[in-house]
Length: 481
Image 1 (cartoon, helix red, strand yellow):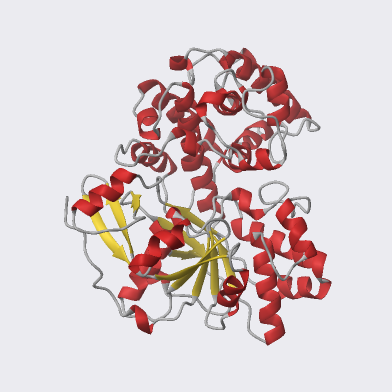
Image 2 (cartoon, one colour):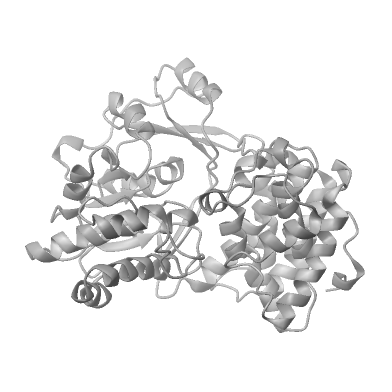
């Protein structure tokens, strides 16, 4: 292993954060923070980051002893270790919301980036209106000056900036949601409307919410990763492990300024829609397929599932025959080649993504990764048997006979009080899960018929032997292309 570098970058003491990032987990630290670090290494003074955690103090506590310098370990054919210094500090909002708001209201901050996963938007369904019944949202409506949710934190910070005559920041979502900028903009405006109609009007007219497409595989860091880095002479309580590939496509709508991310390879475009659709429906859908089919086939890691000939063939068939034909090709892309590259990347055994972790929060993820493909094919009068198997595998992983032992978590279902994993028979589980907001709508005739098809696929998988998870025959009513 190459000896890890010590910090030899720019003078961090001379920098003031111009970006606040909400959700400084491993993905942010392997993606947006690295782009900022690359920009700062060119001599730019704009792009340093201050992080805000909405949940735990883990990242702050791990990074603080090293002054928030951490290491990114890229693993592919070779291994490369890089010290990253763009993050200057992290606040934990539940411990000190005042400090978090102070960071957000600093006039030097012009951009807020966000990675809180789909669940963190507090929407009724992905991209939908604010869920005012969520406990943290209800609390924000009672005490808006001490916000607990992402929308609440952004609304209060914008209110304070407006009151002080400070221009608003731009909010750039980096989560895997179609129209992620519109998604965060909607819940922010909805909450503002509940609190102050004039503030809501100002938010809608003055705050920019550009969308983006982000792509980099970043599994959870393990103790073995830490030990391996320590063996090279570097102590880092929370390095991040990732692949060499990284991509960020971003709508260039930043009225109050932004870092020169183009210096680091960010693709700045007028419309990110075809890029995000391709990524969500190809890469993210394939990730979910390997996770659910892999779990049912007994694979602990995604790379094992991607190297399983039967599962690889099933995912390749899903992408080639159902997903890719529904997509608009982004400029300069070859979607068939992109799909093959995705399958190759998932087979990288150096990235230990667990199938159970990737399978988490499927009620939110599948609504944006799989349902758009289903609806496009139904609208064209075409079948979607691979999607049916994938949705069925999700139901079985959450509610089938082996579900309690698979360890699949779903924060949205838990928050809504849904029955625990392993409860109910196949039909009851299908009807309960597949009709959640954002999934199938039984009031729509085509989707009601498709629900019946997926219910049959759930029955076919309910007691299936592990090795047959993705290849068990789908019901005849959903066969075909």
